[in-house]
Length: 215
Ligand code: AP5
Image (tube, rainbow, N blue to C red; front, side, top):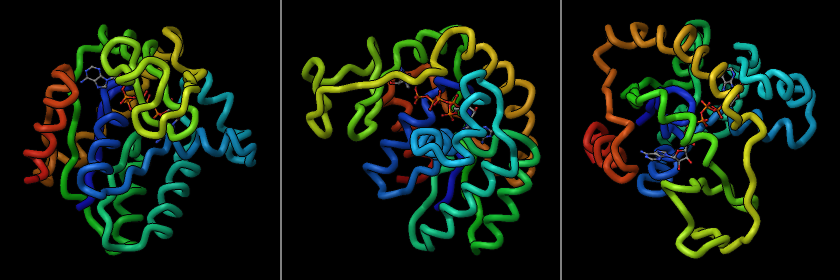
């Protein structure tokens, strides 16, 4: 089963994708994570993407679509993909159709997390991840069970994203409204779009997504 998780920055796409990976052995394909990996590794793509990401703007359609194509090629068949943060423009939605067809795959669901934008700034500025295994947490909504200790790997160091500041978040939200939300009609006609209340508690959002997936 291949699905897209759609929603503005901080809507909970990464949080829910992580749960689907843990519970249903699906694979998370996050273009944001791939780009951050490229930045950390200092690759040519990473060097090109860093300044764009720090400003909260969009990296080129060609780069992100090539990253997705390569990941799907490496994955092979048999494992469901969760597209997290991709596609983000009409050109990317069209590229994804072609990439999926090339790999003999098709989309089963596009799940939009509906959220109150005002609450997202708090979500994003309170977010942090384990520096070792990448598990996501939040200062208020999703703290580790033991202070300063990762629930998953026991590490004690955590990090915050450089683009998780109020000013950049506003740019990312504006781009979601102008570039990403308009791709929904691309999928509406296929009858595969479902909407979930992303303001509900994390576990409730997971249950709503599971119900859509029939799990
Ligand atoms: P990316 O990494 O994709 O960032 P984003 O879309 O802005 O989304 P976020 O990761 O910020 O939010 P999320 O929805 O995953 O929320 P999360 O689950 O963490 O992209 C970063 C940058 O890379 C872009 O700005 C762009 O430059 C570039 N890029 C990436 N993909 C691209 C593409 N396709 N094309 C072009 N450029 C691209 O949740 C947030 C916090 O809230 C967490 O702390 C979590 O614990 C908490 N939380 C989650 N759900 C709930 C809930 N229900 N209740 C309370 N708290 C919650």
